[in-house]
Length: 290
Image (cartoon, rainbow, N blue to C red):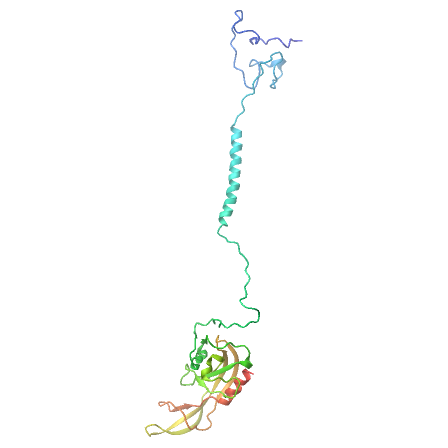
């Protein structure tokens, strides 16, 4: 059995003072970081060294070889990069959504109690709406307009109405037509602010028919013969404030069965057109507003 305390050949005695005059100088080969003892020899009977401290050599424990810091640095850098990526990811999401204000559902607020009437007239979606200062302005409704200060249309039975009509000679101009002054829907010209319905009589193109020939005397005394012609009209009803159509009054005839005591005529064509029947107009208005 070999002496475990025996000094390996070529290895200086660790217990002998370097100043020992009898000691032979020995050159010590460099020690490999992974082995103990002399390079090229397997310590302790050829067994590989596992870093244990050699027996019999207290205080001569081999220091652990310095570990490489490269892996640690790489790990720290990788961790920092991952953390930065996470933070950048959140930052990008926050920045991208910073300008997107959250949508807050809103509920309409009531300015008055339910069912309460409002005195302010709503603005109709009509660029031709005007504020009337006379009853004749209501004729604009028949040309596609509306009256901002007209009365609000609520129920037919309480509505006041005006009726306007054009003629074959003046198709774009609408003039006032008389209604029965005893009717509930009748309104005086001064009471235009109470009117909420406008009836529009429109001449039916090509509906004229020959009537009687009426002798007349011109203002200069010349005797003339005028052709008195019948025709037809259509009657529609509109909300005066908005211009919206609210009813149809059907067809109104303009009969020419006999020459009237007074007529207007065209000096060039010597034609005169009969007026729409007033009784038929009142009947249609009464039916619409009853």
